[in-house]
Image (cartoon, rainbow, N blue to C red; front, side, top):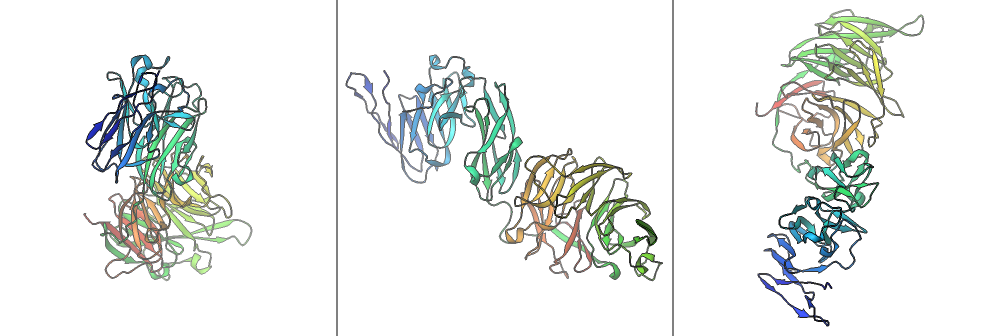
Length: 558
């Protein structure tokens, strides 16, 4: 016959109370145990239960209770005779408290391999394996670090030591609004289907199919769970710490980049300068009706006119190319596209491929134009409303085709202009509608800028499946709006649209890496950053359409 067992410990002394029940069997009546900020150890049930409190685990003295579980959930894989209620129930600790429970060899359930025993927590009518718990088969103990009190016991939930779900990573710290995809390993179950949830509910974020977790706007410690559909008592869990200091300093940081040079765009091209691309120490900038050509040291080389006019004799477009010019004045060379008024005001995105060919989005005339490195027009592709363009590491040309009041299309072409794919669905968890193409990292991940669930950046794998999103909108100076780009390492560059105006560099998960003012000596607070690009050396270039300027910033430690 088993009776309740309780041990009373007061700070440095342990008072063991024993007595006799009415039938003469020994009992250990319940009693309280005081633990303070200095920590201590609680031992109960003749040493079968040990709780080790490190210093700082509690702020104030608490009374700890250890009693055999009164109504443990039934589970053939659990050693219910070694299940305990720890009180105060729901207590939370500043530092993890280690719980160790000892069992006997003959208590291991039939069908359970001893090596598969773990410390488990009762959650509702089921048992859950405590993340990080371990078994010592030599000492016949299970142990784990706890952050709070509840009902715990040793066993293998589900009645079989073979059934197990494990999430990776099991613990992680991430920024608010960050995104992470968990890997799940399932053992001992025929049906490997799982359902995903956040234990704390919507306040702890959201987890979608395939284990894609979106962190909430507020910080805290949350738990992501994958539960077996075949056997709901079997599930895996990961602990996520969401940090509130996600990377937006209250004061502007020390500049991580410094302004190297500013150049003024020739006056006739100053309006509507947006896109900018770099290739082998040369820059290409989309201006009013032309593409301007510069060195990355700020030397102006010339421009290429990409004119077109409607065909007066019938439908369609007659393409009129006016060539490469080294002059900046409209009187320096013949400009039929200027004279007849059919030149392109709407040049937007610019990109270069590996050999230096230049691709330009012309949304006014529904086309993408391709030039050689020397400025010769090579091809024109018809696209309804092209906004941005980028070249993948595999040399495919991607174009965003804007669809008013609909879902934008991501178009893929060969370098010869052959259309390969139209992509407007990116898998579960990605509800993008309006977006721009920022570029690719060296592994082929695709980066899109948008406004999606409060985030600014969405990432796709090379097969166009959603990987996650990051970089939060809002919070004043850390608004991630305006021009955005990505470098080969997957670092993200943005600019804020409110004072103080800052460029910001984030890693792909949304952690702030650097920030620096958009202004510099003799150049204050530009309000119209239209385009950004990063060269192969880490220098950042930006176009300022309000002032008709091109800016270059280099890392301050160079």
